[in-house]
Image (cartoon, rainbow over all chains, first blue to last red; front, side, top):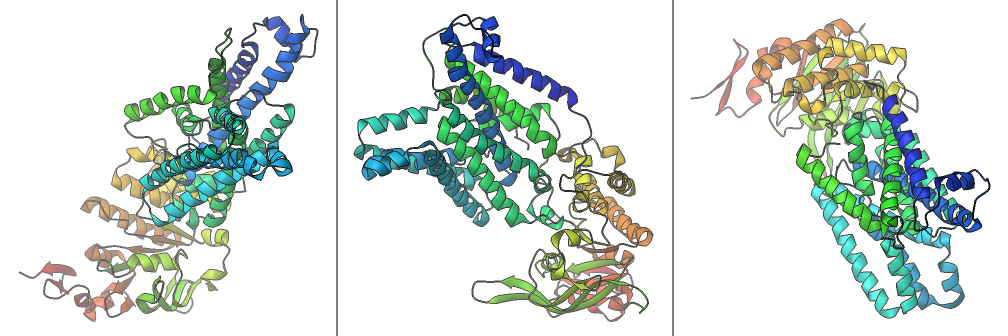
Length: 343
Length: 264
């Protein structure tokens, strides 16, 4: 696919912005640490207080990396879904993927009480959380896809997403009735969404999910470009639709499921970031668009996290609330300004 | 129909088309046989719902045939790898691209997909083909525009440019003249005529512009309730087949002028 202009300037700007946002994210928090010590700690040098070193290396750095992984992964999964469903309103949250993932996690955490003992302990390990969450979103995506094959109406898939949200809420309500307070609390905190408190092991698992998902997206970018013309045109150019669709669904499930398992359901990043990116990058060529969405997603997530931290205060807001507060107005503004979301 | 020496590009042999229902097979048209050689302009005419789109979809391999065979370059359609087929046959559909945000250049260059590597990188040859396709369809001036800004006539030319960029020996077009005024209809059909003459491509298009099609096409496929006829337009007029096209109580065909009239 030929692109009419070069986006080098924008990419350089985005990379600088990413670096700035990353450093900002690491340097701001409930404890004020001088910038000099931040750099010293990151580069392995001498830090004035040893507790600062601990805060930066074991708390803030994994959190910032998580923000980058979550932001870029969710944004890419949103983009994949918008291209796959040919619907500008598609995104992991809107389509109920996050709900599906929540359902998987709810059954795992709240259901663990029912299984009890050894099995319960095994079930709540980090990998099982990822698998339950990815399975949940995979099932929802398959359901959404089954509906889109029968009904060619774009509204239908949005309604399906809403329904899955309700089903999740209902199942969680039933499960919470039977589970004990500790497990319920664990689930509720998870559902607020949080980038913090990740172990380095958790960050590793998260990065495996995200990097796999993003790598596959790059590999299928040629087919994604063909899909921009619609299924029939793509077919006429030799794209094997069924295979590509399945690959895209698995990729989105890994991305949305894996991320939701670690960070909880995070709204609007998947839906809004591709649209925000379109304001800057006018090409639809996925080979350029995917890296741009990736950078935008990371930057926006880092900034949202800074806001959620309420720098210099002891409070932390749920990250899910911040992304919704920032994302919803952006989508509305885009709709009103452009009358129609183009993709 | 065609002389023996010429290379047969598109061939149908006892083809039946239709849909596979849950219980029974719904045959729309049967016993369709033709041989089209290179550089032929073929128009496909018939009343609404007679199966023109179904025939085009079957020939392009998007829909399963019920009986008979389709041959492209003397090889059975189904035996081609999807990408190999895409280098031999391209389509121009009635639907606009789903992503309206695409620029004309992006849209046309997507036609090179079957020829590019896994990354979709365009080589010098690919770029030359895109420039050529834009020139042929007189759309070079539009190349920076977004698809959603184009008029129906412009969009149709751009869609043809995309098929040209795909550089196939066969192009199938589904009603390329709908929504266009007389000037643009004639313009598109003349473009197709010129392409078959100058590039040796075999172009098959469905249309409701029967009088224009009679004037320009080399061959016509006439689909009626009873049968599917394939012949040169002149022959079809002499044999009086156009009278069978529509119910005779409303429409009649004047074989002297080659036009339809309404019975008063």
